[in-house]
Image 1: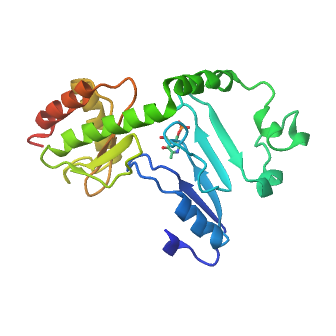
Image 2: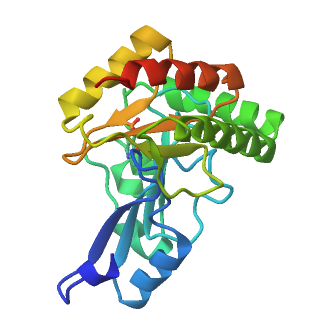
Image 3: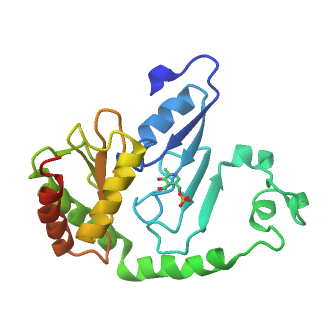
Length: 237
Ligand SMILES: Cc1ncc(COP(=O)(O)O)c(C=O)c1O
């Protein structure tokens, strides 16, 4: 990643956790290295709130994270954090009443937009807190590790490098499968229809991959059903 920088690089836009490959990309070490080189960091932390113990670790300059993925909040609720030196530069994309107040008020208050998701978001975060965020993280990470181990026993499925604290892991599929996004989507839907399991299947020209997650509503039997069914489904393809 650092090798891709040139003297003209002023901003790096990074995923904190990559969705298909389920890896931590914008971790504190990379953010520190970019800061040392005078590169501003914009971090897409869509998966971080609720899954990482410290979503803002490494102090990115600009960071946003969804509360509706691992924070049990309604879709459309997200947070934006901006480091102090840049706050004056942040304005809302559509003019509205509070613009004169600047960030954060001008960004938070958008006149007649629907605030329902944001107003309900604390309920989701309260649920996470009441269950015990650390306990939930441990449960989810252990469950996805178990599921990955089962799938890794199937011919042609290869676990990819992973970050143990995450509740997401990816495996490569045999190289003849999911070579395009359309093929990946078709396989994903077939898995859902035939096995009753929702997984992410991503496409790649040399064979795609399958990503698993673990959540509090998932049970070990679901991963066992997936592994047993996937064997038959992939056989002979
Ligand atoms: C890194 C990343 N950014 C953005 C998104 C999009 O999130 P949403 O459309 O739910 O806000 C996702 C979804 O998985 C993601 O993984």
